[in-house]
Image (cartoon, rainbow, N blue to C red; front, side):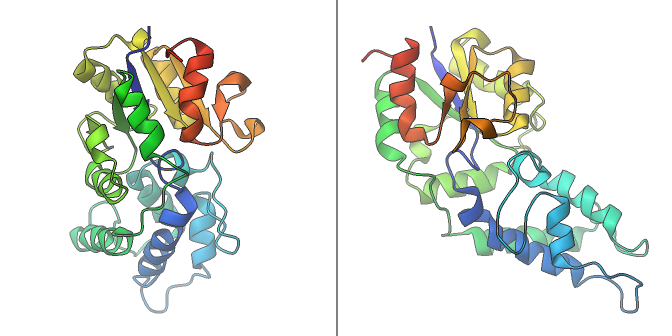
Length: 249
């Protein structure tokens, strides 16, 4: 029996491109603006974004790229390797980190775009008795802000980010914490995600299954994922759970 449903945020609940592309472009521009004058580099915004799986020209995001599956800690580490050696340390410079936080909060606030209809299907799942949680590699504060803007935060408990003390996916600790908070065994839990990090967390936590959100089943992050468990939107999840026998019709 499935009791708990744990959702990734970006690409599952939020539209990844519409919500985050402008923010990441601004962060790349800000980072490049800190390159010391006279530094020997031809680095540009497109190169920074391409390195993490974002096409600056088309706005397309690689679902298996670092931006889609990783944390900003990992993004900073990758960007650091592309920058001149006399640059600040992006991981340690407090002014940089505070300004990045400001940019994310300022540009992200009020711009959360849902990936399809959410309130009705999620409410239906909650009313059917499922416990719902969010597990994201974004920060917990950013996740709560996005959920609140969409009017659905009240449906999720807990909301776990990469900075909540349980590591980032595919580390299973955050997912196992959600199970514990719900009083559910891992076998009674489904992970709903769209990236290899989400699937890896599900495998590493040995949960009861993985539901993949993908516009095309061929875009699922691992071919071991059953095509029957791939849906394009969360609005399709209740019907899928009924077909799987996890939910009463």
